[in-house]
Amino acid sequence: MTKLLRAAPGICCDETGFRFAARRFWLHVCCTVALTLYLCQWRRGAEGISAPGILPAYTGVAVHDHWSPYFRFSCQHAVCNEHHERELTAASEAPGQAWAATMKQILYDGRDLKLQYHGGGAVIPPAEIAALTARYESAWRAGYAANPEPPITGPPKRGRPARGKVLSLLDRLRDRQVETLRFLHDPQVPWSNNQAGQAVRMMKVQQKVSGGFRTETGAIDFCRIRSYVSTLQKNRIDLFDGITQALAGQPWLPPETPPVAQTQEPPRSDHLKTAA
Image (cartoon, rainbow, N blue to C red; front, side, top):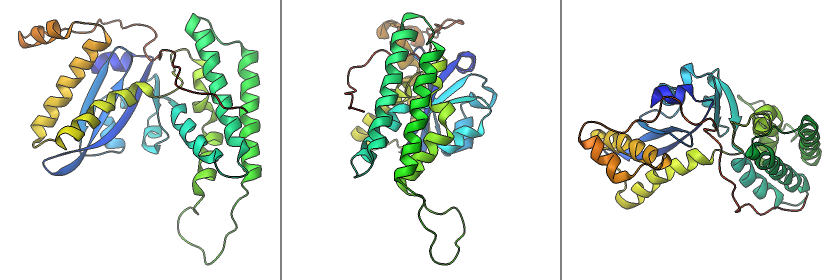
């Protein structure tokens, strides 16, 4: 599994907290539309992300949220626009933040372009990408115009001055523009990190039912079993047959050459557009 994920042109990554032996640990997930790998680790940061053995030597595109430890790895990166959508929705509810609704519409338009062209096996025309990129840059510039830098008051303090949620969002949209819009340039890069988000939901269900694991062994076994079952489901392998083969010592294994569009997400209808 690890070998196949390292060879994939794009992977989705996420992490979530969970408990075993009355202590807080972390579940890390790396996945594509055909593969899922779970690993429990006591670290959340770069050490925990490295534990599955994928990102340290990975050369493809890792799709994730804006959490800074991911950017320590030398692979290419893309960030989740579903996270942006939620933050932009919150920002647009405040007075004077019309730029946020505009930016959200731009990201939706980019998603439509991806479904139209990449979904049909074609590339997005450079003119379409250039036009949307220009709108994107215009939107974050309008955001800075509506949110001037806060004045520095009082004695100097250590560290970076607090920016607030809106300015922090604008900083990410500006400084990570390449990663935000990478989905337009690469058919293997999805618009969002939804694959990984779906993968961690089973852990949240388990937490709601039992609250955690009693032992580390139980948590490790859960990760192994869930990785196998999730991969069976993604490849449309009958679960009874797959589990029977595993119990007989001959588990079903994914093909050495997985499908090309490993991170493509199916069209979704749950995003309602807002007027720009």
